Length: 317
Image (cartoon, rainbow, N blue to C red; front, side, top):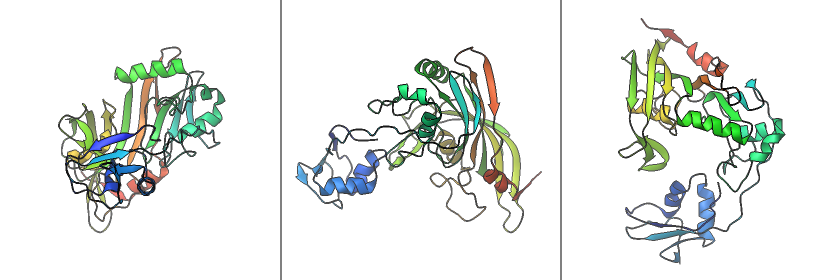
């Protein structure tokens, strides 16, 4: 993401460093970049140059006006893709954990979008760095970088619109497997809690009053504990998000007191069972094919890294 136009902020609550404040409000821009802009005089406070360490006070006016360098073109890049299904309209891919879906400031060439543009050159017709959709050609829903599993990508504009309508109508069924910390007592349930930016940390999401509607259903599959040592409790659940808010499943699970194992943002910071990433896998996806309208369903087995974590646990009756 590039900042294209000057942006002005009036400080309503003081005490935060200038560089941290700007970084928190510009999604996708690194703190080092912000500090460079401050040093170059492209970020000012009350019309004057300032240090990155300046503590802001109520009433300060921060102006962010970096040079317009223009958006970077999206480069196709050959990368291995696990294609579950494809036709002339769309492709279903089993995304590995660790892969970013679309380009951003910190990931320009190693994303799913770069890979699909290399595999399907005709999709370049949808790539336009000057528009939001064009920077994410074919993408109609997302998975977090460290979430693995199924994602459908449109191959052309008509297919993208058809899939977007299904997501808007909530007719796409998504199923996830998640391993939660602690013993979840309810066999099933529904979490209805609005989600928005965390007012204490703009890089996080949180359950907040006035946030966007968010609904998540879950069903307990198994209660588990560690084999050796401290016998901590875990719960394997099947999760169905009915809405598609950023980090929804991760935020909702943490909200009910059972964060996802391995979640470095919303999880518990304590020693316990080691997990290489957040234990969240998009195992099922059902939708109507854009061309024929036929309802299809695809499944993805739990990947080896998460399966290895499960092997360290035993069922609890």
